[in-house]
Image (cartoon, rainbow, N blue to C red; front, side, top):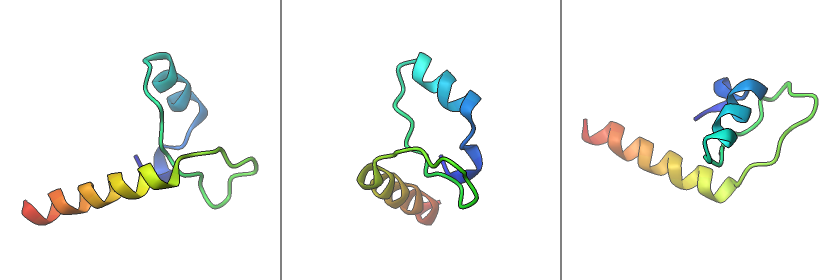
Length: 54
């Protein structure tokens, strides 16, 4: 997911389902949340690759 989906409700719902969210905080976020930058870069790479093969 990208920054547009960085909401507390969504993150809480994902965690309840056992999913570890990897969503970077928005630039205007007062309290930026922690996320795994390495995993986010890998996900972004795969997403771009799938977009190119479409």
